[in-house]
View (cartoon, protein in one colour):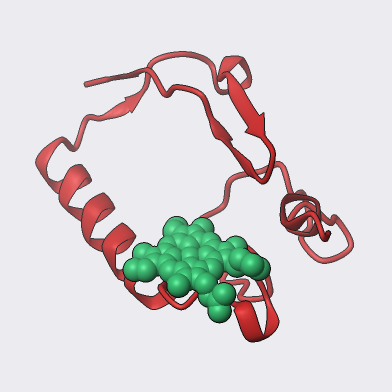
Length: 90
Ligand code: HEM
C-alpha cells in the first residue's frame, strides 16, 4: 500500500517539505489519492476549506497559534496524519 504522507513529503518533488507554504502552487501532491480511486469529493473539500479559512480569518483577524510550532503534537494513526490538537489565541 502506498503511503500518501511519505509521497507528499518527498524533498525531490517538494523543496523543504516540512515548511508550511500555502503559496507553493504545487498541484502534484497525492493528498486526495491518485488514479481511478482519486477522491471524488476533492473539489468540494477545496471549496469548503477556502470558505472556512477565509471566513475564520475575516472574523478573527488576530487568530494565531498559541505555542511554538515545533511543539505542536502530531498524531499518526494508520493512514491518517495530522495535528492532535492546535492551541490558538487571539
Ligand atoms: C480534505 C478532505 C479530503 C481528503 C484529504 C480526502 C482524501 C481522499 C483520499 C486520499 C482518497 C483515496 C482513497 C484511496 O486511494 O482508496 C479519497 C477517496 C474518496 N473520497 Fe475523499 N477526501 C476528502 C474529502 C472528501 C469529501 C468532502 C468527499 C465527499 C463529499 C469525499 C469522497 C470521497 C470518495 C467517494 C472517495 C472514493 C473514491 C473511489 O474509491 O473511487 N472525500 N479521499
